[in-house]
Length: 557
Image (cartoon, rainbow, N blue to C red):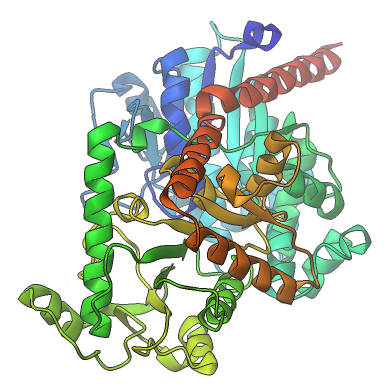
């Protein structure tokens, strides 16, 4: 393969989510690491923010013997770092950097970024400063390490920066270490997400939006500027799907050089007998909590459906999911119980004590708890979108309702006080997952779902949905493992009905049909393993290195 002739000598990757589990980018990096580590053993270094000084971070295995000579040099350069390994498959090398000292010079750094790359930071607010100081610190780490260890012996060195939070560091490397080939990956444009978050139609008017103008209107100038200028100045600009590629071209005025689709690693999925054991345990826990909360006796023949992800009510299609479940509840063709979970972390105030007491008692109850739609307390219950919509629709999990919806507003990290199981250990118990997203650059939740043999519903506006259709060669259906529903700016009602009809169709399947759908889901997930998708990264490496070489040639001649 031609691109394997340009396998990098060394790769640095920086992200806010290195050893810092926040969202989907953590999954991208942590599942891909082993694939790179198998080829470039300890020649890949991940750089993340050091939030955990003096505290135990289960994701970081500190090892002061690693890079010890360089660390002494870094300290002389007033770089405060800790070295170790990321506690994930492959155990890659990690440098965590303390970025707080740079707040004292942030205005100087912003001035330099404006002078060199016209990055506008005058209207910065919120998390912009914190992210930018980390980004600069990461760039300093790479500069120092490169000159200490690599500059004499390696000519194919990559620096890959993820999201706008790492843009300042990528530009720093581009200017101060021009021999390093730079890649910038945006997983979702800041202005595109903001347009959607402000309930403006993104897709109908995409060709008419001006990114700079929208950034000014939505008070996103600083984040948009660093993202845009980084995209225009690195050696290779990438994103994660075709749908986001169109967004980048229009809103950032830069066509992507490569599309880096997000893969998955099968190590996360239990095998054979262990799979059946974990699925049985997950279903038992989901039903146990539901029955204790609602005073019901739902059995194993209940269809368990769930949606999950970040709490973006419209963008993630949570509104559609709730609406569809309400419509399903009134469909006379439904002949079995449906238990629907909304697993999105909200501003929760701990587990419900009354529910916790019921679970600890081990008894069976025939009366519901007060407000049997939620497992944890909320700080602002009256202002919550999920509970507000359920109450508005009159979905109170009445005894005679075929469809019952339960809101789980917490991270499923095995320490939530109610389920006390990890997300994947509960995901495996679902019969069906639903992610009717309006804005979804890729979509890890549906990919994770099918990897655990749980068929799912997604939309044509997600990168994953577009990929599933491309693999099928036509619109993918739930019988194929994934139902891809056509979605646009104006067909909300049609999408709700399509979700309702798909769940109903699945609920009416016999065991042979549902088993076939589960098998097809797993087969599709296999096509998205990193061993297949890593080739897109090698293509990005090739583009970056060739553009760096061209740039250096022009600079020196």
